[in-house]
Length: 218
Length: 218
DNA sequence: GATTTGGTCGGGCAAATTTCCCGACCTGCA
DNA sequence: TGCAGGTCGGGAAATTTGCCCGACCAAATC
Image (cartoon, rainbow over all chains, first blue to last red; front, side):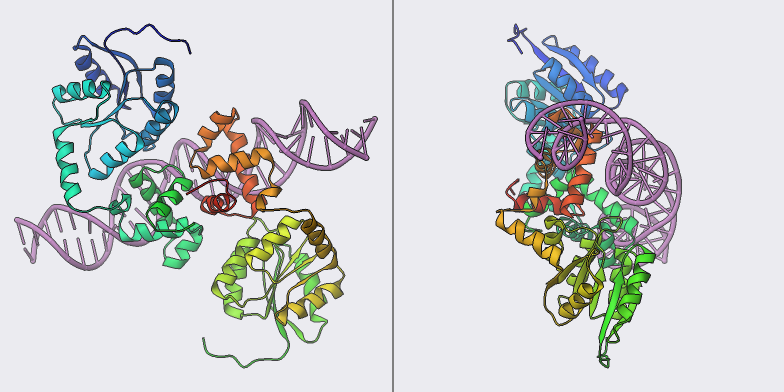
């Protein structure tokens, strides 16, 4: 890729699976005359493609898309370009999700309940290479940090942890179901839930998580 | 479970998915008047159940059953009873399979090409707590041991190793396909092949294998 | 009490994946 | 020249996943 003539202003890629929301925010953002929305995407894969072809200054992304693939998209983009600036624009603000987003490589986190001005300010911050988050997110995180929370596992219930442990140990779902006297279906459901809650996409990632959290060894 | 009056002779559980083969060998074994075939099973799950309820002295098992679940069955049984004696009775005698069987906890390995006498002798050895293998198996293993083979990965081709590495790293099949310029289908096929060749049943087990072999870390 | 909240357990069902098997194409080697 | 083996992918049936929903139960809150 050759060097590109740098157009002043901030180029933005909008990622959200809800077209209406996307359009609405596109309007808001384009009111700022140093903002240019250069592309949109409605899922993780398209987001990655769009990022590659447009190299936007900032990616504004909703991470609650089908497939829980938002975190994944962040990881993908950052894997390709460690300098990518990604601002998560989410419905929710659970501490776990915020942490997951930042550890996936996001530079900022703003909830959809925030004032447009907050989003705009956050975009500018992120574009400058800073980190940013809306007030409500900051509050939640601050609160969380007072209560010593140790890991991504805090968001998991007891049963979920047990199942994750066994999964990581290499047991099949049938074995786990037998061990815990559950139906295979229930184990499948837990497996799904665990992936959703932790934002992990593959079983291999789950194993790594379990090992990092001391749930498993090797 | 209460202690059982020990009936002299060797009680045997036969596991093979092919009924005809099972019947045939049942005949052969019952010709020995100190052998009693106390149960049969046609798959891994039934083998485990039968083992639990009959506690046979020796399990004679074909490991090439649908689901590649033979090794798995061995692990299950040994997990429940570390003293279980399992004699693998296989069609093939690739060194890799033999090693996999022993490391899963088998006590012996006889090929289906062996003379009945060899099988019978092996059963007696195994029942005594010794290890046993038919001559052809011993030859293959001996040969193998001359060529310094280091790990379960030797049975994998270059491509398979690369794909295993990426799988263990946590990449999705789509990502791997993209990275290597393959179709997703091909990656799926490799994934399947890798599991079949290594005898691993879950992705978590694959990750452990990869880590043990230095293909991945964490 | 009554009710909300949250963890546990599983059914349902479309969509995706897995599991095998097969054929095609290369490359090296006998 | 032919055969063995690695690479790549299609096909089809069986199974699993992804996501949603309802039921039960226990503790917390009103």
